Image 1 (cartoon, rainbow, N blue to C red):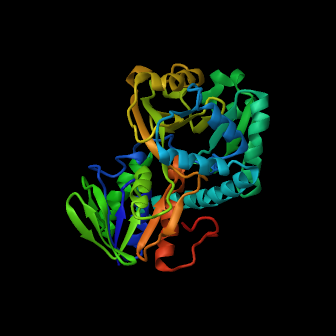
Image 2: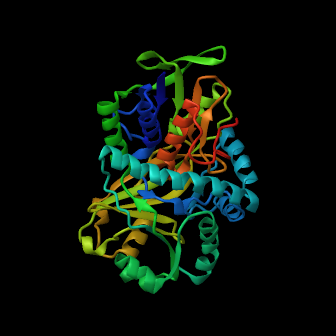
Image 3: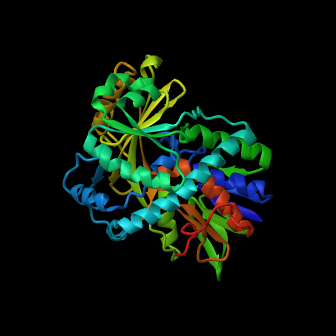
Length: 416
């Protein structure tokens, strides 16, 4: 078939790679001038099955409500008249039970573990690199109370297939010498040895180049999707700023814009943008930086070592489609970074970025056929899109081909 993939972020590009590997003629339509120009441009750099716990939980319910009036939290909610946000919030709140937390987490973990293997297989098969490191990730806590509370979620992940080691501060510093200067400020943590790190932007751009050269994938950059031409039960063409593009099937992988497009055509697709911030810094003294990825669970800061760079990431802000940022948005991030890795970087030289994550109320992406006979979805990956992108792309290719997926499809196949 001729398949049109809408979006050249890591999710859309991975889907295009797998679909083209199956022999389809694939065209990717992307409004930015290059792959990974939007959501995939920057993130914490973590390929993290260890971060598979769903956002919606009894604890998150309390945090979400506090965020309505306390803007100093890692989660920020900017109240504005937005009926779509209120509808999304009600669906999110319905997921904040312990039973739904466990069910959604199990689905995310299943896809994340599979996707990590897919990322590594793609790298091995294509030879592409992306400042990857396969040393694991540390998730650590500042107080004994938060450590005791936080390890419950990781024990659940361990029961469902994630290898972990619960570590005290001495073992933590043995694993990550870069945290030696902050040892006395950390109570302990969880080490996930199979987690890894890498630059999602490099990965996406290198995979796009490979797919174009070796698999014949056509990328229409600088081309905006304006709508769908639908006749009966199928999509005839995608209407774009460059004119209509016809295809036999269409895949929506437009990140936070997926919901905007989908609901114009009657799809139940509650994807809402959640704003995150990152800072990328050259390491002034590489010996003072981290050697692996990590997350300060109390400060809600994630980080990774990307070559000779340090990537810091923080904040989940509900503010619609606003992508702007100002210096004060990064103040807490830099305080934590300097606290953990003193002397490792100069924050005045930081490359600052803010972007939107496509969040579903249950934290589970939507994959599969949607309403029309030849329309498919691969979107809604939230804050772990980099982790789950390749697994969902492989899963989607199996759905399109009518093959049995390699993992249990329960909870993953779109039913809207």
